[in-house]
Image (cartoon, rainbow, N blue to C red):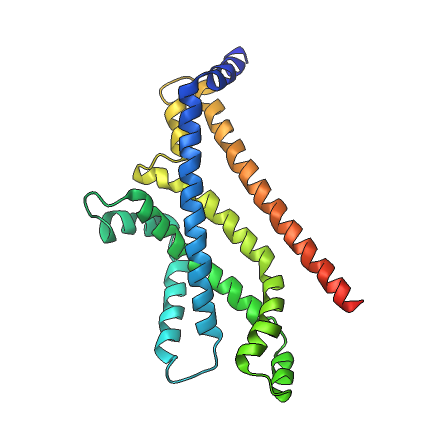
Length: 234
């Protein structure tokens, strides 16, 4: 027990250890942020193509989108990361952080696409038909009627996807990147059990605080949207 508390004091009183954890945490946030940005953007495009009305011009794009989501969702994230690092971007001097962002972004896009697609399809088709009967264009119907309702439906699931991406980035240490997970391993390596547990526990607190903050924001957004629904109904 004394070793445990002694290691806590040592960890938080050693600037080098703190710098290592903060450096690792910064990399984790950078990879997560840009991967989520790519995931939501590309996922939205895929979902819009997949839910668009059948057309001869969309046959190939729809097939590509469905094949893409099937492959990405059907293979492990770790395997996709390895392929990106050691096959596709196995270029000397190519920034590893860019490779990681692309890998996680492409993975997230497949899941985000399904979430957004589900949100769009959850809106009653009768509302689209009513809009057409009133003479509204497809564009107006989508942005004024379908999209606002779809966003309300996808917020919780999209929040879960963001949380998943942040936690999954811990595997970048497997390809030698110095993220939060690697920093904790580095600080506790080659020492006794207490020396290993404390930095790992500290890293877990970083993850937990980040996830809690995101969950809090998502719940606030949901609550705000519910209030707007009540005002409309009233």
